[in-house]
Image (cartoon, rainbow, N blue to C red):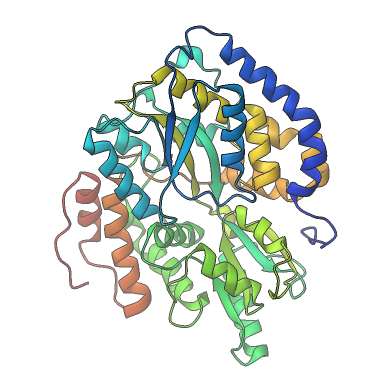
Length: 429
């Protein structure tokens, strides 16, 4: 049985104030001083501009770390330019800025699926691996920073979907997707269909792609194998089974939920389960004025079928301050910066030491669940044309879920072509 969350156990931000501020501040100062003392690192003074998506961490911890950097580096101050909260809109704006040639961006905070695209297009610089100790990073997140045999970024935060469930209604979380489906059917029958089932991210954006890949993996299917080859035709039965299950367990009509709206639905007490990122654990434990309380716990997704997410920091190819940009990235991905991002902001760390820290493991038992989920998380294809692949895939998924349309007969060819950068032909499903 998973440990039940108790309201008096305030999340990381509260107890971290006593632990991190006293211990990590000293270590952070030591780390940054070492960078400053390296004459080859910060000789190109001037403002460092970071282009990034919205910071969903509690208390804006990314900005707090940038503030610390600025206090220590008054001649190389950093500034975050924040974009839309929607991943697809972020990518479009980042590509537009990279293609403009203005040279006004120094660091890109990229979704893990965009690193290959930006590297292949020449929009970011590769990193000198001889200067970067890589052993301390988690293997999966660091692998998302590689493309074509080179290291192009460092992992800022990692991510994986978790199963939030009503611990006042369920003694144990479901271990398989069939168990989850049975639980949803049982509680819907008890409530007269007033209880929604599984609140996930079903709107037409990358969230739908990830949610679909998770249920497909839980049914024993694959869309792309470990070598990057499209294999959906070989797994059509399992793919159909997974998507059919998602249609059954989702709220009626498969509403266009995103991370925020699915959290609102779960907080309202009308959903038995929610699939969401770890950072939402923090917001669900906050005492929001007028918001209902919900008793919950978290578990890995059934069958350990999570998909790896996260963001990577990369140096822009046309920056005038490459050394300072690299030093800033190393600061933001250092062990103590990662611990602060996790303990105060709830963003999953990319450094191993955070998960083995005795204080973290003692005060926040959920870290064990997160650690397990990350260990089993599956990466998405590290291909320059992944975005096109995702668009084609989720179009087919949307038709299946909302229009009861079968997967297109040529879905294999469509996805192969998309990964190669070809536009998919129109399909009537």
